[in-house]
Length: 223
Image 1 (cartoon, rainbow, N blue to C red):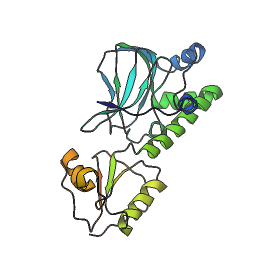
Image 2 (image 1 turned 135 degrees about the vertical axis):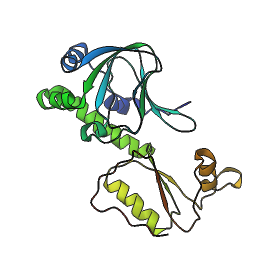
Image 3 (image 1 turned 180 degrees about the horizontal axis):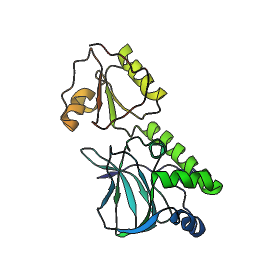
Image 4 (image 1 turned 90 degrees about the horizontal axis):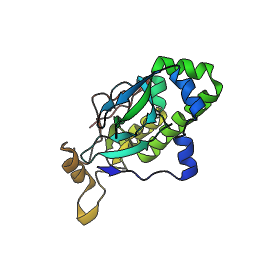
């Protein structure tokens, strides 16, 4: 398991703020306290984001499922899970799991929305964090979608523009790019994922079964 490089300190404080005891008490009034055990999965990657977890004691990790699992973020007491998908109800991109025995406040999506509508201070904290986290995911390419194709292909560009318009993070692999020791990126992709790669003349979107991207005009891709 690998750990992603953390953002700079000032940016990290905005992305992952720590709530005060008074703020935690106001959140607890909208949720329920419960114990968690080390290794317990609180939210599976790809499942609809329906709950927010605020850490009271212990630690919670956001893990990016892959061949070599990557810890996207590690949250301590006073910090909370979630990003923009929690507001929209779309599937989450990371697995949320307890890294140690501890206690959390579990808040349902409906109760969180009610809290955001009635508590101005907490609304500003949660909304800013959720929006900045989504931007961070896009910047880091943490996603359930892989776009495989030549950077010179119009189809590839259409797919990328489509995902950008919908604010959906992506990982891109160029089928014609060369990496260490002369191996192509597409061959490396195939080895790491076990997914056969297409020829270099067409573009593929490789997504998890739970991937959900709202759009009225999806791109058309021809082989």
